[in-house]
Image 1 (cartoon, helix red, strand yellow):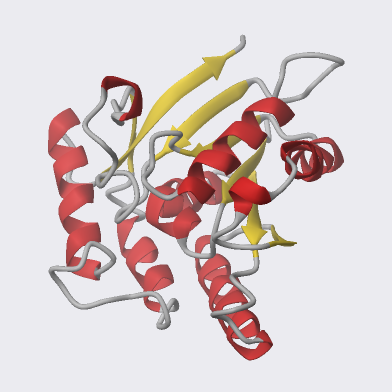
Image 2 (cartoon, helix red, strand yellow; image 1 turned 180 degrees about the vertical axis):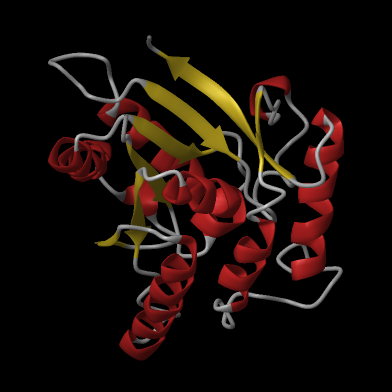
Length: 222
């Protein structure tokens, strides 16, 4: 059975960092994977040219991974804490309804970047199991340079409970990340190809695979 899957990213590249291998795996299995990028960047820091450039990088990366469609919203970053939660959850809900999303992936609620926290909370509202909502599986993904820098409080810690073997798909994840030339950094920055590989190896050896991606299960309805 074909499932419709939505990855919600606060900023372009979050979806590849957290779910790149999973996206490729799901698309190869015949599922429809959609990516929703919530923000366009700060008007003070990003010109229209820069916004268009990073969106083109995202589209190229998504073609490598087999994303069926990429949707861009225009909420400001990093000011999502000033945005109406109802407006943001409403936009996410529209996408869920339009594509009849079965599996939803959100950024981890404990990430250091408050944009990630805001998107998680808005996504959680949009995925409420009411009024025939189609979302049956809800997960949180980890994002390098956001998840691991959170405060060491129990409520904010990323505790993986769901692992996906991406050994066969990991090379595609790296190729997709290479398209984000404006976002990649040199090691030991956590947004480097070496750091991405190290995390995937660590998550993989945790469950006996060469490479894996890890997620937290928020809710599964069977």
